Each structure stands twice: as structure tokens, then as C-alpha cells.
Image 1 (tube, rainbow, N blue to C red):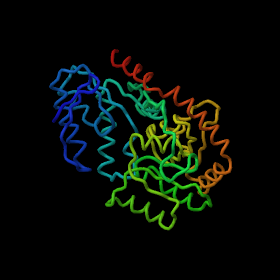
Image 2: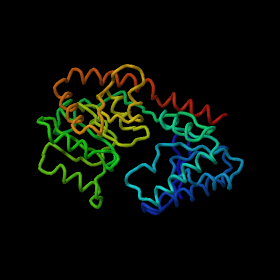
Image 3: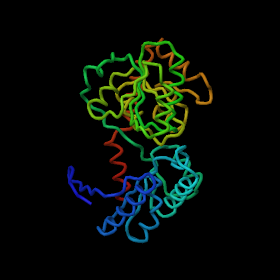
Length: 322
């Protein structure tokens, strides 16, 4: 392992194998071994895959407070087989039994744990954003401002990008569809997405975008689409909304939360079970640019107010000190 310091925080990089099966458990065990030797007051673990080791953590460091952040019900994700799902469900059980407190990133997850496990110690601590004050003046090269549709995120089945491509291909529009995310040549789902988009030059896979380039894509998009089948609390959606981009999201509770529970419209939603609904809402957005701009402004105001990192950090610190 190697160490470095960032703004007063000590960061320890743990070596682990780059393997889908062994990376997380090896990393978690090595990280726990290191943490247990430091006499920390709190060990804060993230996700069910690491929470699975909370019993070991409690055994190694019985006086240390254990907090587990739940980012989603990972066992629901389509990419996992039966064995992996069973292990992730064990992670859910271990997290709620052996942690001193659960942080849930969405109200939906908090409600799930409270109803599924009466008496569980759970609080709602959402993901947050730190929107840039200065945004790029010019759109990405080859694109016009507010004249393209954006998906930004991982290219995995539960993100539903195939739904977006299928709906978009049925529409006559000059607005390109930009798909930003990792594209691995040996990934079956990625290959399927490229095959699905084949023959439509309007659909562009731009790979991973980060930093200034990512900000550029977010700032100038006409619409941000998140057609997910399952989510925790999507940070990409928070980032897009914060920058005034109108969201178009599937009607799953954890995504709708981002747009607020009050009776105020801050974006578009669609039902994944309704075959043509995504196509219809996309067409509506192309025909009503003024409405899209208004919804983007409302989404931005709400997200900046309710998902501010400073406020969330204060709430986290409050629970650390309890």
C-alpha cells in the first residue's frame, strides 16, 4: 500500500487484483486489516459488497464504531449471477446486523431497510454535488449548444441505455444522441449497444469524459436521459440537473427523488413498461425547447438547494460525533 495526503486527509492506496470476482473482497479485507491497526474511532464502509465484512470488522475492532453507506440494493443488478447475488444479500444482512449505523443515499433505500428490518439503525444521507460556478462557454467540438441529447454513466444492463437507443432510432431529429461512458471491447453489453446503434450516424459513443470535458457536455446538453431500471441515487443525474439540463428519467423512486417530492414539475419521466413512452417524451422535448429550458432551471434550483455537499457533510459529521 502507498500513502498520500489531500487537504489534511491521509489517503492509503490498497493494492488488489484487477479481477471482477476477487477485487472487492481482497480490497475490503486488506483495507480492514490496515484500519483495524490504526485505533480509529469510526470505520466507514461503502456498499453491500464491503458491508459483508462488517462482522469481521466488529470482531477485529470491537470498540470501533462501524458505519455502512448503502448505495443501492446491489443484488438486484442484472450483471450478477446466482452466487454473487447470494453473497450480496449476505452483505445486506451483515450490514444491518453488525454496523452501528446505516447511511442510505435515498429515502427509498432508507424506507426499505426500516420496513424490511424493524429497529434497524438507519438515516438518510444523500449523495451530493459541488456544481462549478464557471461553466464552459463553448459546447463540445462538433456539437451545438442545447442541440444534443446526453447519456452519461456506466454502460451496464441495469442503466437501460438499450431502451434509449431503441426509442431514439424511431425519431426523426437532427439532435445527436451522445453516449458517454466506458466502452470495453470484451464487454457483451457494450457490443450489443454498438450493434443496436449501427447504421445511425446520429448516435455517438464518446467514451469516458472527465473534468472540463465532462462539464462541457453537461452544460450544453438539451436533455439528460437516465433510462435506468435500478438506481441508488444517481450522481450523474444530480450533476446534470445542477447545471440546468432538463432531466428525462425512468419512473423508479430513487431517480424521481432527485426531482423532489413536492407537486412541482422539474423534468420528464417515463414508464419503462410502456413501450413507446420514452420515444414520445423525447419527441415532445424536441418540439418544446422553451419548456425544456424552464424545467432545467427548476431542476437546477432544487438540486443545488437540497443536495449541497456542505450541508450533507455537516449532517455526516453530526452522526460521526453521536
